[in-house]
Length: 90
Image (cartoon, rainbow, N blue to C red; front, side, top):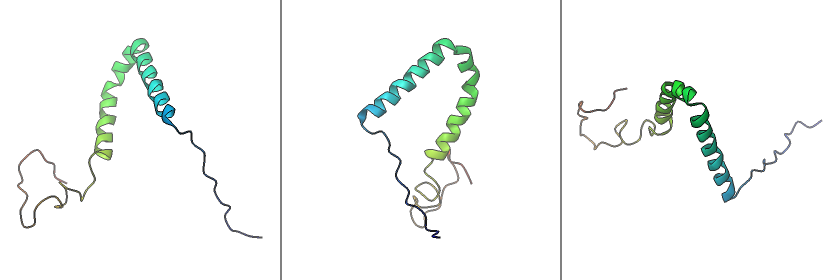
Protein backbone atom coordinates (compact mmCIF):
# COMPACT_ATOMS: atom_id res chain seq x y z
CA UNK A 1 0.00 0.00 0.00
CA UNK A 2 1.42 3.38 -1.00
CA UNK A 3 1.36 6.37 1.34
CA UNK A 4 2.25 9.00 -1.24
CA UNK A 5 -0.11 11.97 -1.21
CA UNK A 6 -2.49 12.40 -4.09
CA UNK A 7 -1.92 15.52 -6.21
CA UNK A 8 -4.14 18.44 -5.26
CA UNK A 9 -6.13 19.91 -8.12
CA UNK A 10 -6.44 23.70 -8.09
CA UNK A 11 -9.87 25.05 -7.25
CA UNK A 12 -11.24 26.93 -10.24
CA UNK A 13 -12.08 30.53 -9.44
CA UNK A 14 -14.23 32.82 -11.51
CA UNK A 15 -12.09 35.42 -13.16
CA UNK A 16 -12.65 38.40 -15.32
CA UNK A 17 -13.50 42.05 -14.92
CA UNK A 18 -17.16 41.28 -14.19
CA UNK A 19 -16.27 39.59 -10.88
CA UNK A 20 -14.93 42.76 -9.30
CA UNK A 21 -17.83 44.81 -10.66
CA UNK A 22 -20.38 42.32 -9.34
CA UNK A 23 -18.75 42.33 -5.92
CA UNK A 24 -18.72 46.15 -5.85
CA UNK A 25 -22.43 46.31 -6.76
CA UNK A 26 -23.27 43.70 -4.13
CA UNK A 27 -21.40 45.58 -1.39
CA UNK A 28 -22.98 48.90 -2.42
CA UNK A 29 -26.48 47.38 -2.43
CA UNK A 30 -25.90 45.87 1.00
CA UNK A 31 -24.67 49.21 2.37
CA UNK A 32 -27.70 51.06 0.98
CA UNK A 33 -30.05 48.44 2.44
CA UNK A 34 -28.44 48.65 5.87
CA UNK A 35 -28.44 52.44 5.94
CA UNK A 36 -32.02 52.83 4.73
CA UNK A 37 -33.74 50.03 6.65
CA UNK A 38 -31.57 49.47 9.70
CA UNK A 39 -30.17 52.91 10.52
CA UNK A 40 -30.45 52.45 14.31
CA UNK A 41 -28.49 49.20 14.16
CA UNK A 42 -25.82 50.91 12.07
CA UNK A 43 -25.55 53.67 14.68
CA UNK A 44 -25.30 51.08 17.46
CA UNK A 45 -22.43 49.35 15.63
CA UNK A 46 -20.36 52.49 14.93
CA UNK A 47 -18.19 52.35 18.08
CA UNK A 48 -17.35 48.70 17.40
CA UNK A 49 -16.73 49.42 13.73
CA UNK A 50 -14.29 52.16 14.73
CA UNK A 51 -12.32 49.74 16.92
CA UNK A 52 -12.23 47.10 14.15
CA UNK A 53 -11.08 49.68 11.60
CA UNK A 54 -8.27 50.91 13.86
CA UNK A 55 -7.10 47.37 14.57
CA UNK A 56 -7.20 46.53 10.86
CA UNK A 57 -5.24 49.65 10.03
CA UNK A 58 -2.51 48.71 12.47
CA UNK A 59 -2.39 45.12 11.22
CA UNK A 60 -2.41 45.77 7.49
CA UNK A 61 -1.17 49.33 6.97
CA UNK A 62 1.42 49.74 9.73
CA UNK A 63 4.20 48.34 7.56
CA UNK A 64 5.57 45.92 10.11
CA UNK A 65 8.60 46.35 12.30
CA UNK A 66 12.05 46.67 10.82
CA UNK A 67 10.89 48.80 7.90
CA UNK A 68 11.53 52.49 7.49
CA UNK A 69 10.40 54.30 10.61
CA UNK A 70 10.91 51.33 12.94
CA UNK A 71 14.01 49.55 14.10
CA UNK A 72 16.45 52.12 12.75
CA UNK A 73 16.21 51.08 9.09
CA UNK A 74 14.90 54.49 8.06
CA UNK A 75 17.35 56.55 10.14
CA UNK A 76 20.83 57.45 9.12
CA UNK A 77 23.76 55.61 10.67
CA UNK A 78 24.99 57.23 13.85
CA UNK A 79 22.08 59.66 13.99
CA UNK A 80 20.17 59.18 17.27
CA UNK A 81 16.41 59.18 17.36
CA UNK A 82 14.94 62.31 18.92
CA UNK A 83 12.52 61.21 21.58
CA UNK A 84 9.93 63.89 20.77
CA UNK A 85 7.13 63.89 18.28
CA UNK A 86 3.94 61.94 17.82
CA UNK A 87 5.64 58.55 17.46
CA UNK A 88 4.99 55.66 19.77
CA UNK A 89 7.40 53.57 21.78
CA UNK A 90 7.53 49.80 21.74
